[in-house]
Length: 231
Image (tube, rainbow, N blue to C red):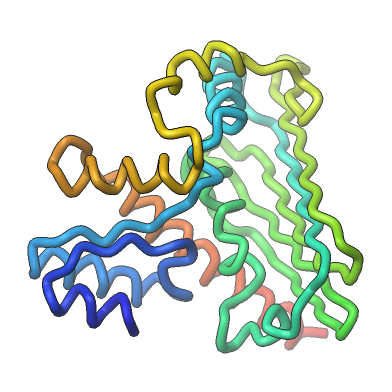
């Protein structure tokens, strides 16, 4: 791959998600980067928006445990490559930002089940996972032919409180904290990459998140194949 050749040439690399389409390949790239003394960095601007950081602050402030989390993403104008899951990875590999965000918000997740259906008109992928405290997490990705991009979520906690896309978040507080960062999101991610290259920022967590979410996506994909074989 281009990423591997760049690392072999001793170059730092910044790659949009997914870095690769399976966890073993990611581990190999990170090991190669370590051997060459360079940085392999996966970009995900979804984790850098003020809106997401405000949501994260709200979720992390919860004193009670998570009971249930539901996330639904509907993406329009489904292209043919979305159906070529053997070559390009499952919908959870291609929409890796969804797993990144949920693991970043809720901690490590354990896959329970997964189903993937696909037609020429689109398809649906549904994953069930568990938090370390046995909370239920459901992620659904809908690919449709209409021009639409919509995400809905709801987090329910043991004290009965909920957080969804309509819940007020400390957006102004977060925006004040990030005011000195670049406003264009790709530049914000590039800024973090450069700071990491310079040694001013540690990449341990980002690397763990990349590998762990790929492991989860790999497990979900295997589960979906098993579920299909049992039909």
